[in-house]
Image (tube, rainbow, N blue to C red):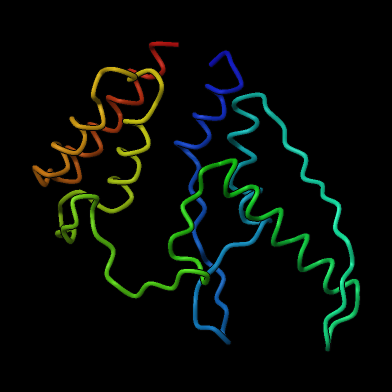
Amino acid sequence: MKTIHEKLNYIQINLKVKKEKLNSFGGYKYRNLDDIFEAVKPLLKETGLTINATDEVEAVSRKGMDDSQITGAASSYARKYAANGLFAIDDTADADSMDNRPETLINGKLPKIGHITIDQNIKLERLSRDPKFKGADMQKQVREFIDSNPTKEKADDKILKLNTMIRESK
């Protein structure tokens, strides 16, 4: 990895941040900025990159909250979503888009036990979009692979193969 774009792409492909906190009032799981930073630190170290999150927030009035609460909430929200964008963290299951449909593969099918998982599906999709594969129609090949309903082991092998191809091209 030489350029900042290659390093950022590597982080985007490899970063996983689960939603492990539970909002008991809303009944949904979420992640906060601390969760994102804790998960990204090893990848930042590996790539030699650093991140510094700062912001400037103007105070506004809101009934039932003092200025510091409003400012803190706005700051936290803004930084979290900036990190989500920078690291291409999928937030489709966030409270802002509560969707109770079952998770499916990119082909719309439900995953089967012993076969490709949602996480493997996502990794393969992200890897197929690596700039190294530009013009190679890798996204189409990956979609056809997923459509073939491979076993977990075959999906892991494909992920390893694509990761290796990306690393060897740099």
